[in-house]
Length: 404
Image (cartoon, rainbow, N blue to C red):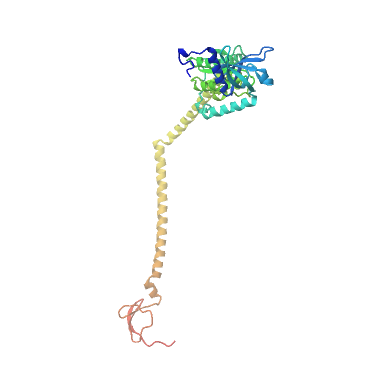
C-alpha cells in the first residue's frame, strides 16, 4: 500500500478524512475533567456546542453533545461549571474538523470538590509547602503594600481604608483582577509576579470577600499555591470570611480572617504605637528614679562602711579581738591539759591493773620449770621449779599429788 506515499500516489482529501474517521472510531472514550466555557445551546437545536477548558492552563477543546444521547443530563452543560465529560474523538467529513463528542456528563459535586481539595492539601503539606518554619516574617512597617483584589471591590476598600486609619502614610501598589471564574488564576498569578518584582513592595495582600466554594476555587489552584510558595515577598491571605479556608491560607506567610483583619495585621496602629512610646518613657523614668534612689542608699552605706574601716576603728576592734582570743586560748589550753591528765591517769590505772606485776601483787605466782617453761598442770613429784611472786623469785620442789 502506497497510500499518499509520494506524488504519484496522491489521494483525495475525502480519503484522508475517511481514514482518520475510521482510525478515531477505534480510540476508546475517556473521562476528562475541566470547566465548561462558551456553551452554545440554541433553542430548538439538538446539538449543544461548548468549549471545554483545562482547570490549570489555557488549553481548551471543542465539544459537541446531542440531546438524544445525554437526555436529562444535558441540563448539566452550564457555562462556568466544573464537570466530568466522557469524550469520544471524531472528525467531521464535510469540514475536516476534529471534534470531541460528549457521550456522558457528570457534575463535580461539593463533596467531591472537598475531597479533591483535601487530597491536594495533604499532597502539598507532605511536600513541605505549609511548613511554619518556611514562612517569612512580615516587616513591622512596610514601605509599600502590594494589594491584589477584585475590581472596585469592597475588599479593596476594607484593606485600604482600615490600613490608612491605622497608619495614614501607608502606600499601596494595587492590582485589580478577576477573583473568580475562568481567568482568575491567571490574572492573580500575573499580579503576584509583577508585585514580587517591585523592590519597594514589602508585603503582598491577596484579598477577596466571601463566596461559595466554587467562587473561591481559584485560591486553591495547585499552580497558584506553588507560585506563592516560591515568591520572595511575604504573602498575606485574606480570602472570604473566618470559616473560609482556601489552600492559599495554608501556604501564605500569614492568614487574615477578613480583609479588614489583614489591614490590622499588616500595618501597626499609629495611636497604639504612640501610647506604647508614652508608656515606655514613663517606665524608663521610673526605672531611672529607682536606680538613683538605690545609688543614693548605696552611697550612705559606703559612708558607714568607711567609718568602720577607719584605722583607729580597725585598731580598737583588732585589740579587743586579740584580748578575746587570748582569753579563749588560755581557757581552751587549761581544759585540754585537764582532760589529757585525766585521760593519762585512767590509762595508767588500766595498764597497772592489766600488767603481770599487778596480778602478782594480788597474790598470784608464776611457776616455771627449771628450763624456763610455764607450768600449767601439776608436775611430777620431786620436779625442780622456779616460783615468781610479787617481791621476787625462789626455788621449789614438787611433792606428792594430793588425793582428790
